[in-house]
Length: 310
Image 1 (cartoon, rainbow, N blue to C red):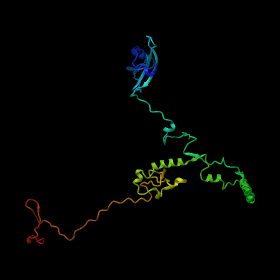
Image 2 (image 1 turned 90 degrees about the vertical axis):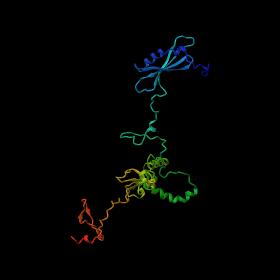
Image 3 (image 1 turned 135 degrees about the vertical axis):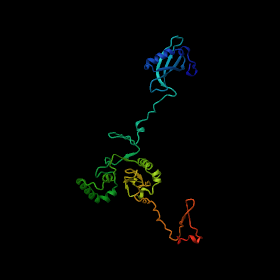
Image 4 (image 1 turned 90 degrees about the horizontal axis):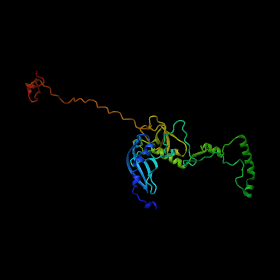
């Protein structure tokens, strides 16, 4: 009988073997960590799995699963296996991620070593000189006409190269040029590696950052920008302003901050205007107190209240 046609109705004797399943779970677990009987599942003909609550600290939602079975026409139920399984709401550890994928910038500390894969796309072979041809080697078979044409110059060049090799002069050789360009390393940055680094620096200190959006000018015109070498100098430099948030970092030329060397001087607080004295108008002064204890102003139409009278 195939598995598809097997009955999913739990076998009666296996379903009633709760005590046998609990005893097996308590034998496998620590004392007191096997809880109540939760449920049971029919695994096939005369095979049933009983689930018990797990009270172990740190295993919230886990269940002890004990599978019991019996042979055909047998009356005795036997133990199959006991295992601790997570339930539908179990507390699970996060999915395991290789160290190379969970490593983040700043995770390395003193003494840590970070191996680089041999096929790292960020790197490409440099020029170490190991594949350089030996001096005066024949790289190709020249034609007879070419030999006749350069026969005289060949002797002179051979003597000159021999003299340079004996004196240790490597000026003008491929190795010297590669060393000057910084290419005499086992591996150098590939084009992909340059693009990845440029994108990372642009995201941290680029034109789209809030600091650059509020800056008075870009780093391209700032006196604190230190140029760098290589092809990246066309778009990046190093900030040397100790008060800038990007001090010591590689910044995009389109980045900027308030510490720009040519930033406008902070405006001074406005100076209040000097007091104004009105020398043309006249102020009225009272000459006698009022009846209610106040004062009475002089009537300009009353001649008796002239300012000259006492």
